[in-house]
Image 1 (cartoon, rainbow, N blue to C red):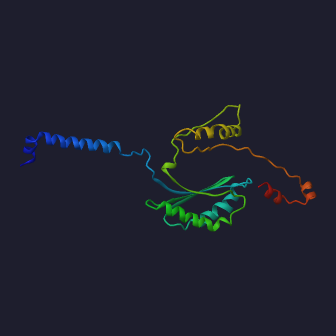
Image 2 (image 1 turned 30 degrees about the vertical axis):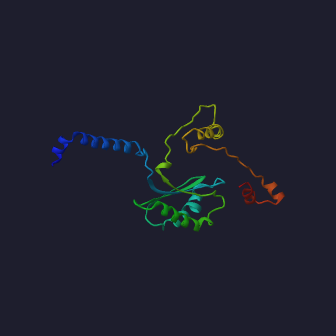
Image 3 (image 1 turned 120 degrees about the vertical axis):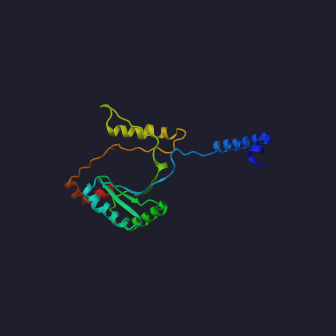
Length: 210
């Protein structure tokens, strides 16, 4: 018996089959996970280092950024290498070729960096080596500004002490990062005569303050 003739002779059976297919499709659709932002990798590994002591960018470039670039330049499957040297920080961005295993690439970068870590200046803080994925991209960016009432340093303090921890307690918030602020600085002026009287060298004072 052909399918059209069977469908005519058995309408109830055909109806039940189609209803079963529709129900199965509806159940599968309702349980299908949907990701608006799939967790794909950017293909980058970033080395970020904060530096204490107000070292000028030129010196940071020579003493920190270049040694790091030379150490990680031999990592496999590198597409490009970019760096930024500022007064208080050094950033090296390593971009890899498409299809590279980023977990293995980040591990290789850490191994290469470990070889020159002890040769870097003591003024550096704990280095951050991270590979960024789409799940790390913020889904909301908030800005705060003021007229002449608050200085940028005061705004940064308000955000750190009053706003950040409140936003972290909101349901669904995974992390809150604060950026673009200016921190308060303390200028220390040394009197050479007093240093000589106590037998202290300038570098010794800088080390203690650091």
